[in-house]
Each structure stands twice: as structure tokens, then as C-alpha cells.
Image (cartoon, rainbow, N blue to C red; front, side, top):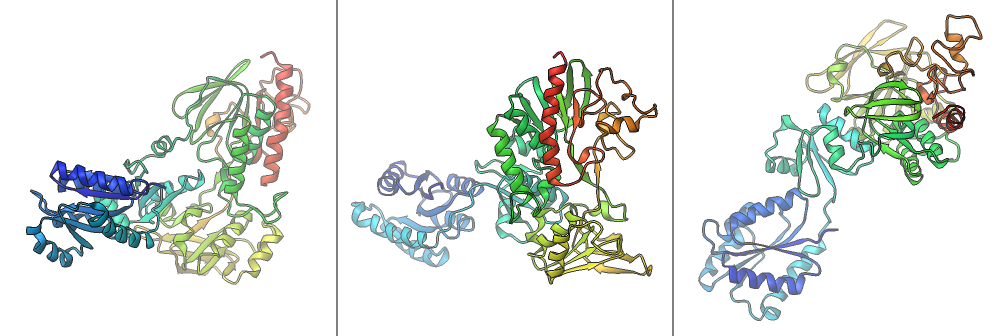
Length: 560
């Protein structure tokens, strides 16, 4: 924790040096002693301390200064640090002004100059004031602060990025936080330019890009080397498992994740059927543990970083990153995962990030305290989200198109939902419209059996309606099914129009593709992006783990 500040202000350099010396001698072990030689300089320093989120315990200010006297300085400084103790240094002739200041700026004490000896005339007074200040002192948050608007899509995207990358931050809503408004005014940031990010070193960024924040926070986005034994694209459970096993078995491995390690599973509020965790764990916890494990084995993780293209020049596979750079490898594992499918309903696209969210959006949970939350979907992800939001919301309403939850949700979740009093499940129900100007205000829902529709007040709508792969960048080089999922192993034979037993088109090796290998030798696919995969965390971890064995077989049988 940074030391609280004692700030002394005096235009007389000899007096300023003397008081700073005496303060440092007595309080330097517990406080940081700062000084300013004018009121204007002290205001600038005070504003800087505010932006750095430092604490000021005491202002010790000379009254008689040109341009800005001590009382005038305190009038400007106290709104920034209202709890700081305040003491005026005065000459005998200024005692009347000091007494008036007790009422005008509520000074705690005034001291006559000179204060020698300080052991009798300075320290006893300040000791009492500082002890009183410490009694109610609460250390300031030492980290990144985000000033934004709950209904701003840019603010939501920033909170989601920070939360998923497990970067601690303090959220200050411009509509609710006086502190947030003060900080925005200090940086001259208007409400249309939010979010505003304030870093511990005092640097502020107005509506920055994700890439800017990632670089500022020290996230690793550039590859250290041009070549790796194994490149893994995608940092969900499957990709992280492949990285752990690849690196632990001696392969020089890099993992590339476009958003945050953990993938879609990382947004899950609770995974209760994962082996070895009887009490369950959150997707964020799983991602954090897996990342630590991967790094311990020497995996290089690039995040946030995207991949835009792939090409093959035997024996190498090349990928192009979103920053334009290119790296090569002997073997490539595609663990791309999937993205939430968009709901094509009037009004939703316009309000996405402003009351409409895809996925659990745990960063929004506290903002939903005491409100009604609506969830679209009937599979496990929707059920986990419903249980999570039930801890914050007044009521959670699940909107399910089918007749029940039994066809798509695990039984343990169905039982938990049934036992939770503030969760309501509405079957045969779908959203047909979203309404609102700057944020979601209402949704129109329709009953599939009766055809009746009604408008329901709503401020938060979370959507879980299946997933789609992001494989467009492969540009046909890797064979996919008609929905974009990557075909591997024996499924490649069934997908070809040629007679059974023929190998995939363009396949030049004498062997058949391995179980998780694509139609491009040395390029593998694991996890949710793979055609026919079981969409469960455990299966993704399993595929990522066993895939490394096929990588070793490939490397052993191909000249590299």
C-alpha cells in the first residue's frame, strides 16, 4: 500500500524547506511528504494525486501567499480530498483570517510561525490530527479504475475484457458515482467519450481500444520467435489442455487467443459436473488455473490476439496474426471454439451492450441487483446463468422455445432451477422484438402455442441460443461441414463425394488422417469447433490432451 500523503505549501523557500524537513523527520516512515511553492502548483499536484487514487492525510498550508492564499487553496483542494485534515500556518498578524477560516473551510487548526521547537509546538498538534484521520481511513483501491456508463456498449466491452482477462479494476458509473464525475471533470472527459480508464501511474485513456489497454496492462500480444514446434489457435479448455500437454512433452508451444484465455467456457458462472471439483468451479477459475499450469511448462500465450490467415509450405504451416505479423510451425492445432449465435430480432443489434448481452456477462451482474433479468435459452449455459443471476436479481425469467428444459439441460441444473424461488421458466416463448432508445426498456414475447404476444418491461436480456464457429478465415483450406465446423479423422472419408475408402482431396500421405487431424496433414482440430464434438468442458479438455499424441506421431513420420 502506498503511504498516505502530507502536503505542505509555502511560497517562502526557507520556510518550505524547514517545515518539510521537520515533517519528514517525524512522519517520513508512515507518510510521503510532498511540498509545493505556490497555491497553483499545489492544486496541480493535488489533482495528480487524485487521478493516481492516492490518499492525502493532511494539508499544511501557509495563509499569506501571492495569487492564491492558503484558504483559497483549501477551498479548491478539499472537494478532491474532503477527509484530509487541514492546518494553516500563519503569522501573528493573520490570526483573524485564520479564525475566520475555521468557519469558511473548516480548518482543524492554525499554527503560528515560527513553530520551534517542533517537539512542543508542531508535532503534538499534528499527532492528534493524524491519529484522528487514521481512525476513519480506508485505503484507496490500488489498481485500474474505469469510469463509464452502464448503458454504453463500449463500457460493457471494456468491463467484459478486463473481467475475462482477470484484470482487477474498480467500476465507477458516471450516473451514480460522484467520484466518477469528479475524475471525468479532472480529465476533461465528456460523457460521450466514455469509458475513461485511469491507471495507477496517473495515465488516463479516453475510450481506448482493447489493444491499447492490453499493451498498457502488459499483456503479451506479440510472438517472441518466428517459429514454434506447435501453434495452438484458441485458448478455451481444449486449447489450454493441448498447450499444457504439448509443452510438458518438450514441444516449443505458443497459444493464441483472440479474447481471453478460457474461451466461451471462461464466461460460465459455475461448472458443477467437471471431474475433481465436487463443489463446482467457475469458468474463470478453470481458466486461471489452466493458464498458470501452461505458463509453468513454458507455454507462450498471446492474448488478445487474432489469426487472420493460414497457408502451407511443407514442412511448415504459416499463420498470419491480426497485427500483420506471421509465425510458422511444424504442427498446428485449431481450438477455435465457438461464438454465441445472434438472435435475429428487430431492435436487438442496436441495443447489444446496452441491456442486451450474449453470454453470461458476469461483469453486469452487480448492476442487476434488485432488478428483473430475462434469459433466452434452455441449455446448460442458460441454466448456469440463471442460477448465477438469481443471487443478484429480484427475479430471473427464462424464455424457452421448447416444451421444457429436459431435452437440452442437465438434470442437476433442472433440479436447482426448480428449487430456486426467484427463477421463473416460461416455455413455448420467444422474443420477437426489443424496445428502447439508448438502452433496453422492454421486450415483446410471443407464445408459440397461442400466438399471443405481450410487451414486458426489461432492462437486462442475456441470450444463450446455440453457437457458431468462426472458421471463415480458413478460406476453404481446411474442410468444414455446411455449418462451418471443422471435419477431422474418419469423418473426412464420409464427407467426400468420392467412393468410401478414398482419402480426402489433396491428401498426399500414404496413411489415413489421424483421429483429430484435418484434411491438411499436421493441422488438427479439437473442442467445440470440431464437427461431431460433444459440447462439454471435459470432452474439450480430453480432445486437447490426446491431440498432442497425434502431433508427436505426425512429427515422427514426416521429415521436418
